[in-house]
Image (cartoon, rainbow, N blue to C red):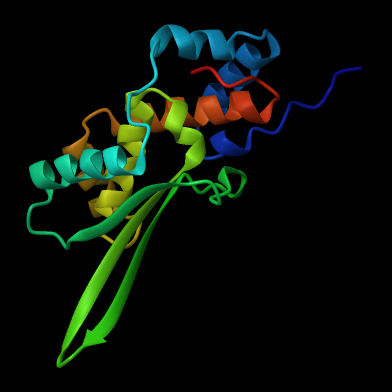
Length: 172
């Protein structure tokens, strides 16, 4: 009797062949080891201030004319289980006779201890929302402009979340 393949919620949008490879690595207990070989070290961004500076550096390099980011922080309330890795919020308020926009970026606290590439992918994704609100072609072009390996890092991050979802331990 064969068992049904494990559902891989973080990889549903990927080709069945990639899902099968991930499932095989998971079944062999090799997924975590593969990720650790590929990304041996975690990043050094540990505080909200350091995360703000990290995001501002990307914004200054790639999105000079985009809106001001007022706050960037790690948020322990973001549920990665609900497929949110980070959040970009935008509020408009009336101040006197003009409108003032306020942008905040929140990154799930789980990503305090991951490789720099994973954190970079999330920050780039949330910064791209300053220009493009929806996840369309222009949005992903902007993401790959800011980080050319965006899609690879996103896939590897989803592999890591799959590893954790299957009961694997934190790797970094």
